[in-house]
Length: 109
Image (cartoon, rainbow, N blue to C red; front, side):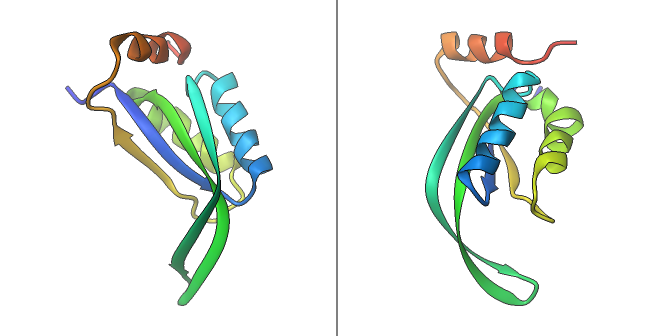
């Protein structure tokens, strides 16, 4: 069985867009918590050109079973980028109390 908890990395073009996505995820119980890190410099290749942009980085604490069917579509619908960065990383270990809190604060069927 895969690890049940994940951290999702999402970049956004502005603080306001990041806050909108964060609030949407927490309100819909797709995330227990979202940290927003300001002033991330991203250098990347897009449409055959090297880009350099200031963005914000969202650190989303959630559950793996919510990612594909709920969290990913919600972020894509709310995000202004054509191809937004949405990467899920497993949480291999953590404080049991914190992991229990993530489970309690996220969507259950």
